[in-house]
Length: 466
RNA sequence: GGCGGGGUAGCCAAGUGGUAAGGCCGCGGUCUGCAAAACCGCUAUUCGCGGGUUCGAUUCCCGCCUCCGCCUCCA
Image 1 (tube, chains in turn purple, blue):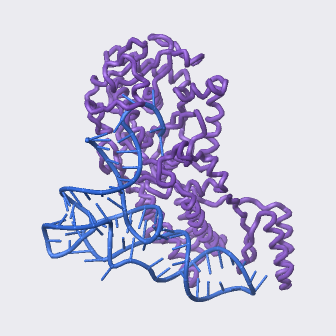
Image 2 (tube, chains in turn brown, purple):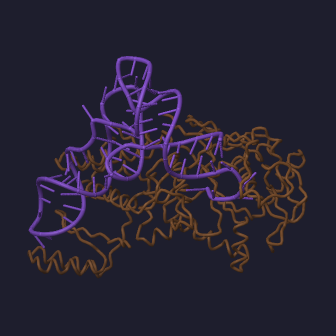
Image 3 (cartoon, rainbow, N blue to C red):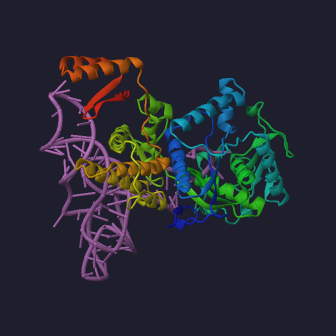
């Protein structure tokens, strides 16, 4: 069974065939560290996480790089306003970014190259030099170096844009110098007073790298001239990825990327997030509403990456309830399985993974999971499931969860809670219901709720919800 | 204006030229000292609108309405 992906370049679903056997090289556009990343950013990173985990589940050996943009207009402006050096300013957001990845159970990329790393700056200068030699890049009157898009006939093919129809928008006008073509983009930005201490020497004078070049330099340096998959948000298709193709292929002479995968936008309450609309959420904001990492992960994961995902707090509540269903099922299976030896694989154990093979069809994959949950719950109701079968299902879940990462956090109860719980068990064995209810109330005050089941009392942590 | 993605039950959301997965909510039942939870069952003659092709279309074609995004540095 083959894996298929929708390739933005061809605008069609294609069978995935890596360049080299079962090795897969992926480059993913990472954060610009000028503020805390928002949940839309994390939707993209969770999609990339799903991509990597599924490829690994299918036996591919994945090498993934994610860049950190730590120099650009926004980081420079932010550091100046904060009165900090660029490094001190971005350090804080780099740190929070990695904390967030862990919180959302996103697997770390193999490397997180930073734009300001000297080896990356070196590679960028090397590439510009190559482009200058080929006369594909030129230095304008403002001393910046630009890429001459007329020298790259395929420019616009990824985005399906016709260059003659590029319309100048307000965003362009503030950034215009002496470019030959309105679409020419900066490879190297000449130093400006506003840049303060932020500058590197280059053969063309003091300055800093253009944003697009960073990804081309890091991708080709760390993964080679041609990679299998390049991911990012749809908003990166133009001009960012278009520029990357132009620079990389012009500089190296190699085809750059086999499969372009783009993640659709996250909307909030049906609209694009924006600070002025008041619907802008960082991960921290959602956490403050009382949601856990896996709940947020589920909410951002459950819709196919190519569809716009509407984030709402109703959706968060739905995510919480859905996860509870999985938790309860696992608990039942564990109680039944005990330490039984798993029975041989059951039929159709592969359907979950087969669903993901189809361009990461997560909705269909989750439906397979829920179908299995319902079928086995029914079997358990009828006492038709053996401990060995339950153990096999738990083993199957391990594989599924290696991709989903939706297992419950098991918070440990304090000794105080455990002591009250023991007292309550004693009271219950004497059928002292009054005492039992008192103790339940005591335990609730400590943040835990109890369910009385045939197998005894079950503790669970009360999740805060503002 | 150009390019792209959508419109499927109250909400979220799969899917197929052959008669609608799954999740949440709701309702009914089981369980239960109580409670809560859980589990099981039920819940779209219908897939934005109008035509066309077809034995048959939600699925293909044409037109329209509507929502969202991109069109130079936002994932």
